Image (cartoon, rainbow, N blue to C red; front, side, top):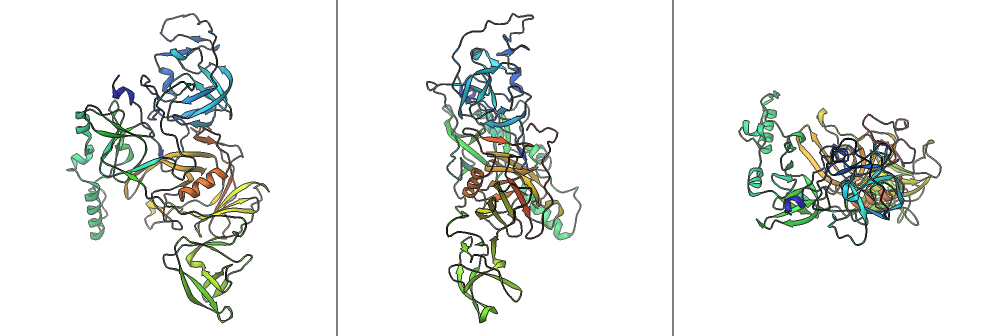
Length: 555
């Protein structure tokens, strides 16, 4: 058996911008655990030649193409108590059939417990070697998984499969990550010498036609045109788009990578023939180790958990040159007292009102009422009224775009507050990424999910396995961000960025709760997700409108 066969898998072609995954796609990776498995997506699995095809009455029939084959005799078996996910994305259905709505999904390598024996075989493709045990099983946490095909299999403690590294659920960063420097590619398997040579420092077809114009030369020429006032787009060197980076059909290349993209890492692999070193990614791809640099520079900032002596109002220093001020002349003046480090939390006096001095507003500290912070320099977490459509004991999230602060409430009681980075603004109308104000509910949660997209003035971006993701409106999500630490400043493409540890805290606190072993859960149109209220300061947001399923949604 060759290393190529062992590591053959498809890469996950994931979300544009911050769009959530709703189901397996043709380009989706499903990383196999056993060397003999050819991995396919949920939809492609039914075409597998080696599968036992379920008949309309649920009896298993052999899939050898013979017309009018007799149903196989049901063989006795001991049902498994646990199953292992063998695909990167293993759907958990609300009912035991392939067209049922999604409840959530599992990730490759996770082991979960099941209840009793199988409930059905209908519409569940089963491999020949698992024809006795195969079928739909109900998970202990609810939902049904098709077991016995390419995506899930029975698991016993005697099995010794090499499973992908599982996410660290107790850390802000669930996986190891690497940033790409230069141009490289994600391969389906370890490439041969010729395949590696052909894809090292690749150029796209239009770049060859344009004489190999790089992104840097494109930026320089664009800058020259702006200075000269030439707005003609026709002669501008074209920038790569995400679609340009996809590998050709039948090629060993899944997709190409540009400088600044991020991948989530599983383990190192050394090719015995060439002695070359590669990283296997969490999505099952193979990437040369040379262009990758391990990312270890994420922010250790943390917000404030409310309770005891920590309460609202609360301030986070947001200025690079922030100070505490001494209130003088009976509240008619303010003098510099001492510098406060950026992002430092400051407990403000309970039930206090701002002191207005000239055009500035100051908030007194609890430790010393004569000291205060200037409102313009901080992000303020304030007590907010609970909207009437939110239950009296319901957990809900308030996001103030003006203050760049997220505050979590348990009914009327504050539970947590922190700085965030929401969608950035730009003078270029094509590059507005404002986070939309409104009242929503969390409708999907992912331990990690990949985000990518094209932007008008830059190369495409791609970040594998963004951590602690909660979608609340269309493709807008609250999630951890490890690629910057500018909390309190607008930085994102529209999502609400949080420091990784803060994102993990709010992810575990908010509803719906993720069952043990699951990688993602969907609340869909149900009213079970935590409410999210997004607003600008005291300006009231648009009214709450329940989410409605869109065409193509599976949940």
